[in-house]
Length: 271
Image (cartoon, rainbow, N blue to C red; front, top):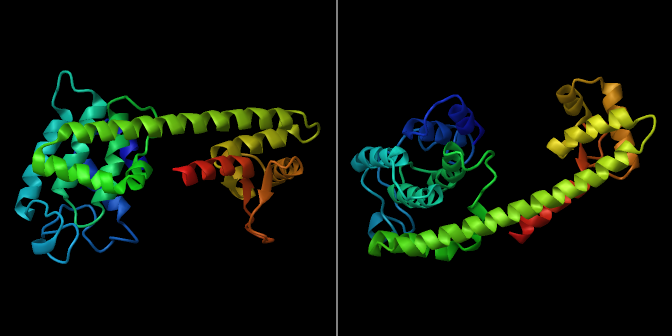
């Protein structure tokens, strides 16, 4: 995600080359690392079953992947009067998953493309719209509607489902953001009430608002302050009950902004 957005900011177009770059990074290690990261497939794949003959879905043959992805790339940039960017993202997602251009990671890249497309179009300033949880929560309906597009051309039902996911996900993200802002505003006021250590504590609090889990060394480096200053700040925040040490170690200790993480955890569990 970060690589793709950085490339877009530098003026590189959303293209098959960029999609392959993101795929290569995604599969650089771990699951799928031996399945040609960053390359369109040169062999047949399928979804469900043990072979193409009993599979739930068989994507295009390898020889058709490049032409299909070429057509998809043209659609990404073709002017389509009257087609909102959210609808375009819905159409691209189906087509990408139908082409299934990689040996592995197609679902992850297909979901990744949604916020990247919207960021490229200027709809999102930050990639804060992730439909992965919505798709997982409605997994059976997701696959059923993808299948209906492929077999019956039922685009309308798919687009309705996709936009419902956008509405729910965006609403939940906005509500979570508001809760986090309220929490941080209240805690910042508590920190400002400190006397001697208010300066150091305020700096460390700002660092934890950006990354709610951090070591003293990491936070000090990001803030450009000394380790003693960072330590005083963390100790002051711990005294207020805002942060706690979560490793139990004497070295390489990590501190967490507890209530911030609690809000994020509750939202993830609810989704």
